[in-house]
Amino acid sequence: MLSSTDVQQKRSAWLSERLCAVLILLAAGVILTSRAWTDIVRRAFHDPSFMYVFMVPAVFVWLVYVRRLRLRRCRPRRQYVGYIFLLAGAAGHLTGIRLEIDFLNHLGAMIGVIGCFLAIYGTDFLRSFAPAFIVLMVLVPLPAPVRGRVASTLELMTVGGFRWLSEVTGVPATGWGEFMTADGAHLSIQAALDLYCMAGATFLLATAFAFGQPFRGYVRMGILLSVPLLLVVCNSVRLILFSWGGSMVSAAPYGLLFHVSIWCMLLLELLLLNGMILVIRSTSVPVTQFRLAYQR
Image (cartoon, rainbow, N blue to C red; front, side, top):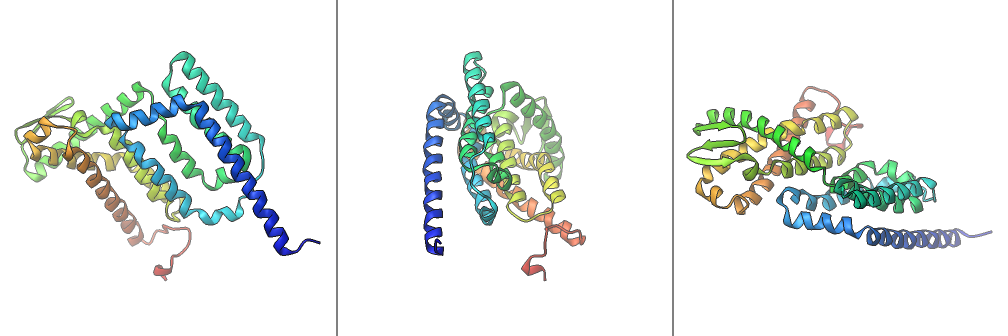
């Protein structure tokens, strides 16, 4: 009969073997789909619209960390679901390359890499860490027509929000289409704000906030549904800041003010989300799945 020490050593060796196997399989998956991953990295470094990609690793690590205790309920086991993911990812990747469809190419690469992990560790991890895996899908750039539609919709919403905010702050402003004239500065909304980048960053922040705490399901849904409202409010504030920047914005729309404004607006969004939770708590509506220590 094996002692507890022998069982522990045997279990540790078994887990180590699985870890080595999954690392090798993940490395092989990334190498075989290197064309897609190289393109994602290139876009992140050279296209300001995809700057939000740099937030993905931090949000992924955060969501795994806050769910680390769920590892006790996850039993590593080989499952055919992982191989199905692998085959589907490979098919999508190869089809995307053959038909020159970037979205299918990138999506196939991502599904294939996730399949490499599931093939060794099983679907228990997928269920327990679903928000983290969903965040990884944000690395896949949406098709250009979809990005354009998202940006144009946000432009129309931002124009309305900015007009109202300009009246409140006293900044003289007029707007038509995708252009605004504020405080003497002629601004292109899309060039000044890069709305698609802000949309991706806001979604990641809202996901990290919603699933980083033990909120109830309806609270998490409300947080995610509030993303468009957060975008309108924060983009309107950014336009006010850009209008006060005047000629500096016109000369260098992607300069220091652009990058600083993104982080300032993310901080503002985080404050707004916390304020929303405080308002809900003040109405005695249950927010978390259980009472926290400071609520007793």
